[in-house]
Amino acid sequence: MEKRWELAPPADHKIVDILRNELQLPHVIAQILAQRGFTAAEQVNAFFNPLANALHDPFLFSDMHKAVVRIIKALQEKQRIMVYGDYDVDGITSVSLLYLFFRDLGGDVHYYIPNRQHEGYGISAMGIESAAQEGAKLIITVDCGITSIEEVDRANALGLDMIVSDHHQPGSTLPRAFAILNPKVPGNAYPFTDLAGVGVAYKLAQGVVQELGLNPKYLDRYLDLVAVGTAADIVPLLDENRIFVYLGLEKINSNPQLGNNALIETARLPVGRIEVGQIIYGLAPRMNAVGRLGSAERAVQLMTTTNAAQAMRLARELEEENRIRKEIDQKTLEEATERVEKTFHADRDFAIVIAKENWHSGVIGIVASRLIERYYRPTVMITIEDGIGKGSARSIPGFDLYAALQECTDLLIQFGGHTYAAGLSLKEENIPEFRKQFNLAAAKYLSQDDLYPKLHIDSEIALTDIDSAFMTHLKKFAPFGPSNPRPVFVTYNVELSGYPRVVGRNHLKFQVKSEGRIFDCIGFNLGERITRLDPIRATNNLVFTVEENEWNGQIYLQLRLKDIKSDIL
Image 1 (cartoon, rainbow, N blue to C red):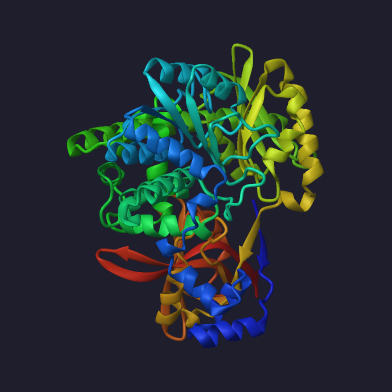
Image 2 (tube, helix red, strand yellow):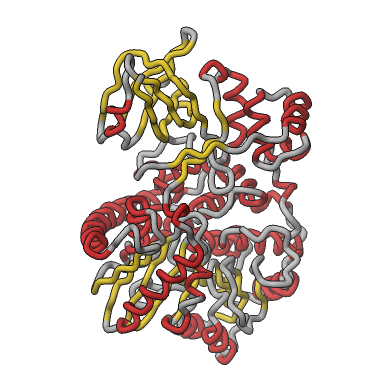
């Protein structure tokens, strides 16, 4: 699908000049900082140098003191603690963090993750009963629980105290838990609302550390877990999330947990050079695979083991599960695409809702995301079993899934999630009406213009501007992610050096030149764009990011292409 190029409006030139002069920045770097809301040198210095001492006070959470006191009581009295988590990477790392933390403090701690196929998302009655049978006195949820009204009531009836630690959007009624830690709860004084579940779990551990008078660096040992969970959950990499990922990447590249180390090795990722991209596309799918196809507890075992041999065995299991998951993904994508092609009309439909019996519930979210890449519509995929549909929904920029699903509540058994991803369940007979209502909600919130993907461009740049000073400061924007994307540049009328070619699996490769300098260009999955390039008869306009690439021990600059447009002379 063709993308519309959108060049960011110019920043206030006075602010650009202030940043450039006070920090000795290249003009284009200062301009991008100003476009992203930086107005003073102090802000830029804090952004370029994320520090642990900039983390917020955990006791700004309304119920933090209450939760911490209850946990310390459980630790001191050797009461059994059950950490109850979700089966995705955020949940897995959250459970692993608190399990290790309480275990290292000498606590009697167990964990529970529901089975996706049999229990579904969130707290289950089965999980509550299991905790009671195992003699737990305190349940701490991570990455779930904020909408589990009945389940928390059941825990209370069984004499279990429950601390709900979550980051998802709360409903109109809060569960009657012993304590609730969620930055999105109305009236909460916590200053940053976009923490991942593992971020909230870390803040809980931070509160315990402060209350016990331990060295704040005590928690550094868990930072790689926090980085993996935060990056994998696709939350904005600003504020505390940026600090968590920045410091966590330092740890994962220098002294990772045994489990992460084994996973990096079996996935053949670059040791010592892990970035957010390797987490999202390398580590996360392997950790997610076991939760999608079976029990996510194996991933927790991997993240918490102290035995290197066991870590390698579990990492290989995750690798195999991920291979199987890919095969299921591909088959499901083919079936889903066939259904969309038969029913979808681009000029009529603002959303896609498709359903089929016995699609694997563990992969429909992934496939929904793939359909968005092709059709660029909010997408809901539903698998039907025994008359009940379980769905995964994914969104596009500008469309709030959670708000749209709220308009369909009369048709849903339950739903939960956030702006860009959500889960739901409904009766099979309600699916046609849900498809109609969801499409009406999409039409209400989206315009025709929203249905075309846009390629945001930060700045026009001359190739000669890409020098050592530029790269030094560009790298300081990392880690990249939501709300802090890798800067995107456009250069017009680029001169090609030689002829382009297609390599590997449909990748476009060529070189460009400017004032005697040669730049390598790579466009992954852009092989069909080769017809747009002509060294002689066309002006070649490129949109790209600038990266450092390592090959045979050598590091060189590379332009990673986002799009190409050419004008025939």
